[in-house]
Image (cartoon, rainbow, N blue to C red; front, side):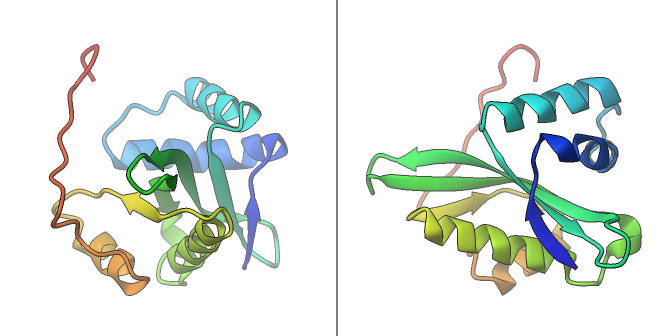
Amino acid sequence: MRIVQATLEHLDLLTPLFVKYREFYGELPFPESSRKFLEKRLSRKESVIYLALADEDDRLLGFCQLYPSFSSLALKRVWILNDIYVAEDARRQLVADRLLQTAKKMARETNAVRMRVSSKVSNTVAHRMYESIGFHEDTEFKNYILPINGE
């Protein structure tokens, strides 16, 4: 397995798995809108996307997408791990672990103060995975959301 940073050339490879990720969370597929969304993030350099590729055939095994943010208190960069997904036939092969280790390395290299991730309360598999690489539950801050435009 190889981990590479996605470029615009990877859009055709990435989009179908991104659509499956959206469907996993109950969203409608919208393949064209999904492709355009990814294209904008990559072309504007608004996110960093890592791909896990199979060594033998360059099949996409999984991906993660991180968005940059900043901490005004620490005066440093923060990375938000917004999306991570592994293809069903690639699960239990440490794909997510490799993606997360790569993201963690990138966060260190960019002098980030931390990475943040959120997951459904019921997603205990994700919780264990995050904790296994050093994430811990935030007990200092409570997070809130404010829906805008019906989202």
